Length: 281
Image (cartoon, rainbow, N blue to C red; front, side):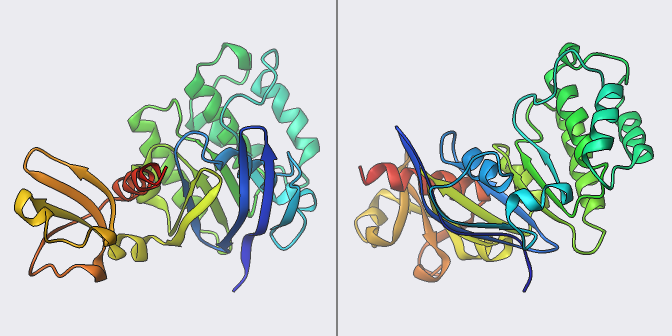
């Protein structure tokens, strides 16, 4: 299998945080959703993929190359504005056309029109959502083989978020295109991703296909009576309720004929894993 992104043993340390030997692979031609709470390591990981920071150990390959060698084939959107406030999108068109060998001015104009962005308006005067749309338009306009998106739906209203997911799905119609997509809006991840990776406190918790993830976990519903009978060692992130408790469990560990099991969302799986990690402290 070919990979759009390959990360092995990645280490990056800061005074109060560290990426701890990260291993991660994004198969070519698929969408990888990247989830985790604030400060978990998502943005740091993404910056190593984009060659914005250098790791202290480990190896990162992007489209089979070193990150700095693959940048012309990567479209990226980072959380927060990365364009000068005093420039217009018309100015950015001139700059970006010289930066990317496959820059497509007609495609850029099409996306700006689709997103209702005035090419003469200065970037600093745009709303947070419109800035994100402008950066997305640029990321989609040089025929990138890989999109790396850090919170691309941040600041966008639900209607445009839905439209954006449609745009990304259209981008994936081209064979071989890949997306690495982080978001706090986990429902967006659930809609578009083929694979899901969760990071927590600088460590990968899981990385698997969306189907394997959703089939592999259930929410176990326990009455107060059942609490004393169930195997707590096999529970992930137990939460007490008014009538008993709920816990995340692996589907194979509990018989649904004996217990009440509910299908878990990706967001629930993430939250229960975080609770499990907090309980260990």
